[in-house]
Length: 388
Length: 112
Image (cartoon, rainbow over all chains, first blue to last red; front, top):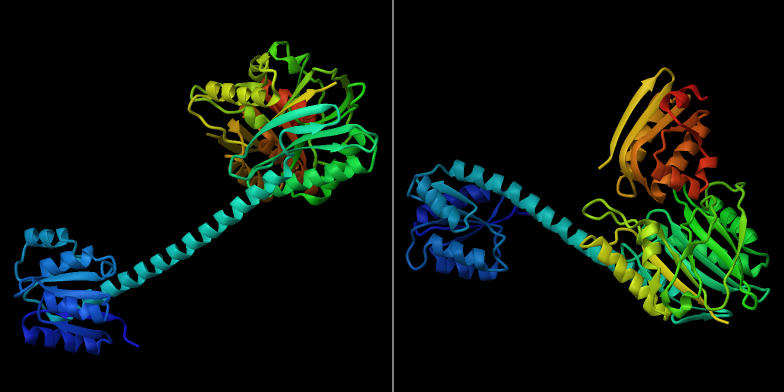
């Protein structure tokens, strides 16, 4: 098999013959042309890897040929060497400005030309390999992006449908994953005792791994809720499930609650998660005084034997619960300030009565505080109103 | 920007961290801790958090994994000098009760 295809363009037959002889002996497939126009005709038949062309020729010189080759989308990758009797740096620079890849001055030794062509072919081989790798990478990236957007769509499907409605509650949410797919999740599920189970969780890290674990968290929560008991039993079960199935350094923070739709009694367990706010009469809108739902506890997935504690509160009709993940308040502004939970508490002091509008209002206000800096972590916000 | 320094104090290794510990820098910190544990096999690993302005859940996860890996090799992990913001995060996640936490590096080295 030939080492490659070389097109020799020169109006002097003896020069073509000498170069052709050496190149063939070195294992190249050689094409010949007497001027630029003939060279283009040759190239229409077989595309060369390298062109070595004289500069001054009748009908079409090497400069025009070079310009045309380099402007042609198919031919432009051919390595172009201009051979010129005009010695000196000025003409070399002129040749390279035409887009030629290299220059050879006349008179030349055929061996010198051959050495140049051999080295050019090493470059060509590398370029070909790079282009090939690039094509492979591009196609890999496209495949991955396709998979990711599919996964992102699936993950959106794991979130509750909006507008959200369950016994005793109505809610809306904003869900903004940092990488199209993220480690945040929330869910509401009917408890066997007629209550409504509520869960929000944030898996450490983000991207695909975090997303897989978040799906696991949701599945675990739903199966725990189905098996009865209350938030404490559910969180202990979720912690067991996660400790057994996730890798070192992967953990989840969660807040899990149980609401009795008739009485508004709210039992909950904090598993390392940021405290939700309760806003008395928040569902009526206007100026209010939000307060943290107190509590603390270990993250899920650390250790099977860690204890959790259950807290109790009330959510009378008309009250509002604001649940969120820390990505909402932990954006570092250009001046290094962070909104923090206190800042979010201030924003929540005055919200529209409609839960969906309230969620939108909160995100808008947080973004206004952050300025041009965008969210870096997954963000989930749930505004949940107790209805009588 | 995270600044990490390591040094030996007898059979103990001390890792001093300065800056914000979040998911963008955990890989860097993980490498340092892993290498320290692998090469020094310290009986005691002290992580000094005095210069840490912020730690997020991936940073917490990293510290928990560090404790587990030191536990496995028969050593101990002590945390020292938690600034108020970090202390608050630890409180919220109950990690104050999961780690051995000391007010000063000297206390952490003594294990007092």
